[in-house]
Image (cartoon, rainbow, N blue to C red; front, side, top):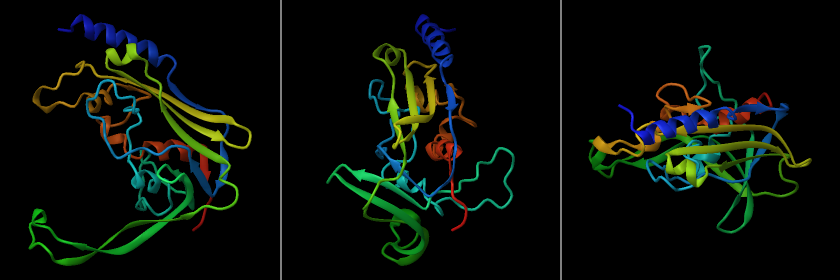
Length: 240
């Protein structure tokens, strides 16, 4: 049986969903690189009710977030289904490192990286082996920054968070004209209203009650979501 708190939260969420959606005003073809106006941190918010860190937009963090936009980061899909999103990736990404205020250009590719086994792997610890993985490279950027930028923002209000509702804005911006050429506005609600029994994670559960709706169980579809949206708007240039 629903509590009054759950009923109020559900009704609020339905109202917020009336203004949610994907709004693409203009698409651009043959984009080589993009600018990330902010970069997600590595921390995943599982249940901090009032942390305004955009749990709806939860994705990779740090360097992995940057890499998710680059060509070669995602494995090739030989036989995609109608529901499969095939990432193309950009040739480069630029972002400002908040530690030094410097703008960097990021590229990357698959390489053999030397790793060392640990006892957690079930093998003898300290053995060296090569592992093929995507490696990120960066150099100080020079010249003009890319024309198109990507930013995310938590748009929740204190009242919404009081009812375990998280709001999100994801924008693609023409940095030359200052025009927002695409925006995704999303909301999600935790039906359990912060219940943590049995190890429950409120914001992970909330992803199953989202608009626009995430596929699958919700939370598993959040990874890579930013790049999926951006590629629909800024279509990467073909070729290597």
